[in-house]
Image (cartoon, rainbow, N blue to C red; front, side):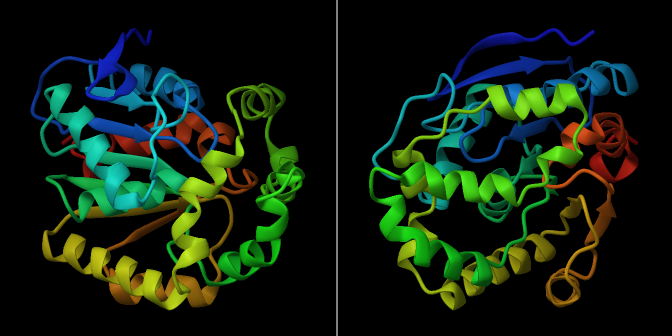
Length: 268
């Protein structure tokens, strides 16, 4: 049974659970507009397959119970997450991030002490997404901003999820224009090539530190992206959990929990 201490860690609302041991803690970062409730199914499965594993699940800035910020640049949010990790008394965790959280987990591991990254369905190259988002930017900045978010949701294949997971996607979310514009600011304001260079540098740092990096996705990655990822991080492990769209952690929480409990994430 998953039981957690619920309070603020640094600036972030979160839940801390688990005991001691020499295995690295797992720090969970949700996706854009969602909150830490997204990880409930995984945490319950993890409590069965890896009882006592130390975990910290937080609401990212501006989400759930965590306060808003003037800026949501990845480096700044990673710093806030590090403050929460420090306040929780954790050292060099494995960062588990879904969607936006996957970018933040990657940024964090390249900047602060960490043992690894589990990136859940977040490609690190934004070229195609950036082009689409910039075409929609006038709508995003106007009264019909929700149309942009609904368009994004339409491509996430939520219909592939079981009913309970679809309900969690529908309810554990609070889309707002300040969140979308704030967290997408870099994509809207910086060239995609510049962002790609930044992600490439982060992967180089992760590789130089010898950190484990796993990419978990709901479908076979695009061949060009897979080639880029494996070129920059030859040690990457790619795991496909089919039939889960953009939410592998909700379609297959038991499978993800087993992956997190495995030797590559510090359980051995």
